[in-house]
Image (tube, one colour):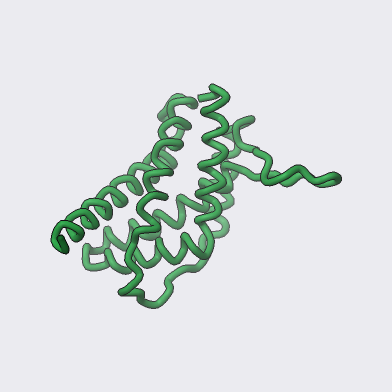
Length: 166
């Protein structure tokens, strides 16, 4: 049973790496895709990443590696995504307030996700021995910052899909 659980976890971690690579590829190559096809692929891959992040074992928790860096690059990617996504970018968040409405941005969500996911992949590319550090980075970052962006992006993409916009 223990071996079966280890094999299942190994497969989930492998799938997480593959989905992370695919997500980064999609972000980096947005202009190579039809707009609706790209959104559809992003909408399918984010839940796969989300499903595994919560399963990462924290019993071997090491020092938290989370930090927001690359602010200028994030802003550049945000602007690029915002221009490309156009009217599919903005969404309402939470309940409508009397005087204020809260809005989110899919571009902001995806830019933050991209940089955090890419940081983990970069660690893995430096050597498979960095896998535990990458998983720790993803897990900690998810709970400290980018998990909210992931959930907001999933909700917005779900709404777009339900309204047959992709």
